[in-house]
Image 1 (spheres, one colour):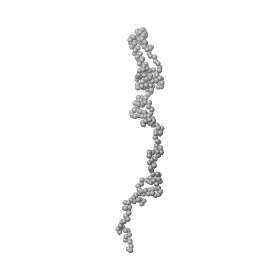
Image 2: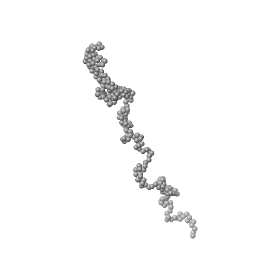
Image 3: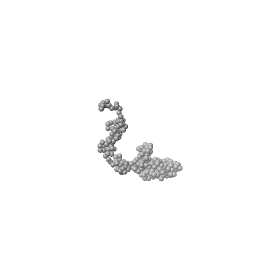
Image 4: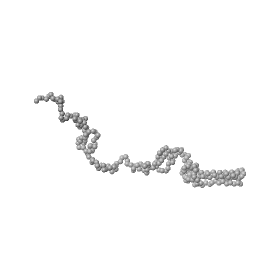
Length: 252
């Protein structure tokens, strides 16, 4: 820290300079002449102004000041010269904030969004905007339910799209399979039949097909109603006209 000499005021009632008569007041290298009371008032004013300046400008500092040189609280507008980066004159803006003058000269214009971002604390994470000019920080990782995991953490936590499982990973699968029909070629063939309506016909070893019910084709299987409508019952009669060769029967 640089140490400044304070200017002092000295009253000399016997001194006359610059063509004036009467006492004179010397403040540093400045001589004030005239009435002694006025000179004392001027000295007091000068001393007060000097002390105020000494408190408002702290001189060169290698660390950020926390109080004024006299130990009183820092006031808005106070100045000090930083000897460490960013080197230069700094002024106090309030709320424990010092602003480098050079930074302001080439700085970003005031903006509500940037002000909100500048107000974020030092918490590590991803910045999330939750409203107009409102931001918060989400932690990276898996520490809370609202954290954002990394790719590696996701890979460790979840299965990829293409994956397999042993039977033991499927709830009750082992016990359920134990109560099921063993694999069988006949059952497999039956399971392969399509949804066509009809009756199942085995045409070979473990080979099955469907026959339609009705009279749609010669291979169809008619129902009782179909046969009753299509055929005569075993006990039935005919009229003479129903006998096609009735008139051709030779007498015996």
